[in-house]
Image (tube, rainbow, N blue to C red):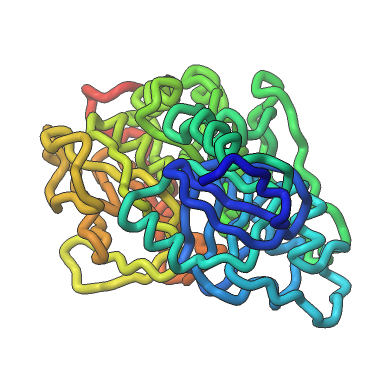
Length: 425
């Protein structure tokens, strides 16, 4: 291709293999790069954009018509858009009535601009999705600025690899805070008191304390926990095991989040979990699931194109029950005796290695990848999907009740762990 400027076009998407897509821009102007992924959900673009698990990624929405409903403050999964960019087929602007409970920026264009986010429209998202499915996720760049073909290609190929970043530390809370359920009147701000971890005191309340280790937690996880009679304390993912024990929790939830669980910078999170496995009931979601499994000695590997959508079928262990789930992850777990880099999107169904009391409790029926892990003797379990939905189905809400029931059992029987396991002190 001759060396010329691409400025005649209002927006350009270039992949690291040199493929280009020309369209129009939405949101703000500029240049942004990230890992190009696709999500097959029919709706929920606000929740997807504000999910911290999409940190630095360029999200392709396979649904062709996007934008035809408004933005509500209550539907955001965090305070910011974490994706680096959005890729859509056709923007159909919302023209409905602005409700009193809606954000001031009540359409997608204004929402993107408010959060300084670039989007590209009017491209062939079907072709792009086929490229990703066949070749795997890759780096890409969206720009509205004057660049030649070679300049853009050099830029995208020098951009950071998603696999090589500690993204959890970029999205975690800076200070611990007690989560309070949002008010019914959305015009009133939600009040959460933030404090350094060493200034958090044990309350006089009789409610059990659930610690949420924040690797990039979605708000609907906290909303669902708030439906139980518990105190919810959200803490930074950098909190040490010693600091956690001082908070005397009744249970620990390992949240979702972005990044490669096997990256060296995540080892400190895994080591913390290892120390706590014998001490408290645990429930891991997505990245939390992966970190828990790695703490048990299993392996992780990168999927070719990942699982991102709200209609993924999951089968529970020893049952014919099928749950339709919301998923957003690019990595999966495989037993430590299996290869760490399978050549395909799928992995064999098997039981964890060297852990006779643990089981892989859920299987993804699309590709047979492991979707759940359970160790009932230590009250630790996890799933490789989003039981809170947002967006997506509610089939797996019961997992929060399962976690709370284990917390209640732990509180009632403080000596349920065997003598050779670590004490809580």
